[in-house]
Length: 73
Image 1: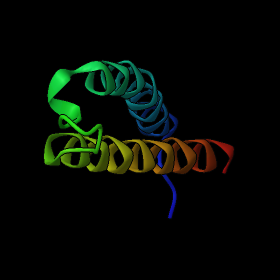
Image 2: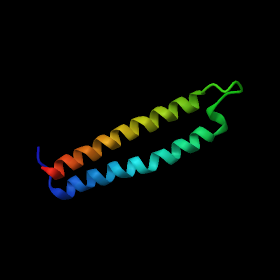
Image 3: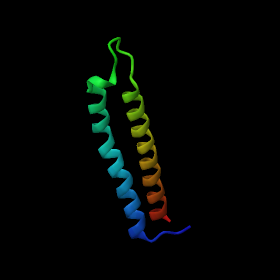
Image 4: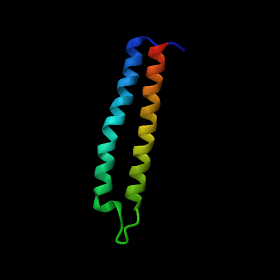
């Protein structure tokens, strides 16, 4: 499969954007009082957000890699 350079750049930018945006959100989630119960155990709030963030970052990394590989030819 071959992609034009502008489309490959869009994939790279989308992947980099994802990798930049989600880590600060994760830091805010970890500090949120709803993230832990009274005993300090993780709550569903933390688990759901952690899964959302980790999945998004994995997909963002894959998108950036696909864009780089398409740009490289």
